[in-house]
Image (tube, rainbow, N blue to C red):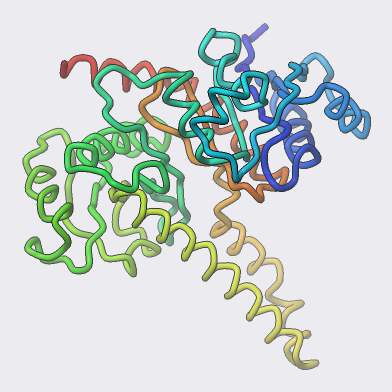
Length: 336
C-alpha cells in the first residue's frame, strides 16, 4: 500500500474552529487516499465534530492539545508558555518526524514564531517567508513575502527570489520562472532604498530569470511567476487583491439582481461566471507555505472555511512529493 502523507491540522485555530478545520480534514481524506490527517486540539471537542461525518476512519487520528493560542496574545511568550497548545503540539509533531506537515488557521504571529523556534530554519536561510499562490489571468503567481518579514534586507529578498523560483519550478512545473520585484515603476532607478539596493543584486543572479520591476497593476495579468517583496508590501497586495475581488463579486450580484432583465441574464451567464470566479478565488489554492524551514508549515486565512483548509492539506502532498524542503536545504547549505 502506498505510504500516506501525514498532515497535522490545528483543529482549534482560526475564527471558525473547530467546525471548519475538522470539516476540511474530512473533505481531504474523502478526496485523497494518500493522506493521513492528524487533528490537533481538544480531543472531546474534535470527537464531537467528527461524529457528524462519515469518512475513512483509518485516515484521521486525533492528538490531544488542551490549550489554544489566541490571536491577540504576544506570539513569542505564547509559544514558550503554552507548550500544550494546538500550534506548539502540531509543530512538534513535524519537528520529531511524526508528521510531514502542519496546517493552521490560528495566530499568524504564533505560527511564524513556532516555525522558526520549533521546526527550525534550514541552515543558511536568514528569514523564512510566507509564500501564497495568487490567481492571475495566466494561472497563478507566487507572492514572496506576504506577511512574515516586514523589515527585510536585500539579502533576504535575494533568498526569497531563489526559494520562490525553485518552488515554482518543482510545484507548478514552470522550467524557467519569471522573477520580478514589486516597484512603483518599471525603471531601474525607481523605488525605495530596499528596492534600489536589491534590483542590481537580482540582475547579477545567474540562476534566476529576473525580468525587472513589476508594478502592482500588472500582477493580476500574470506578468511574472514569482513576485518578490518585503512582507509589508506583500500583505497589502494580498489583502487588496482579496478585497477588490470580493467587492466586484458583490457588485456584480447586486447589478444582476436589480431588474428582471438582469436576473434573466444572470441565469444565462451563471455557469461560466461561476467557473471564472472560482479561478480567482484565493482559497482554491490552499494556504501560504512558510519556505526555508526544516519541515512544511502552511498558514491559511484566520477566517478559512473547510474548502481552503482541504486545499491546504492537499497542497502539502504535492510539496512532499516534490521534496521541496530537501531541495531547499541542498540549495542553501551548499552556499555555506
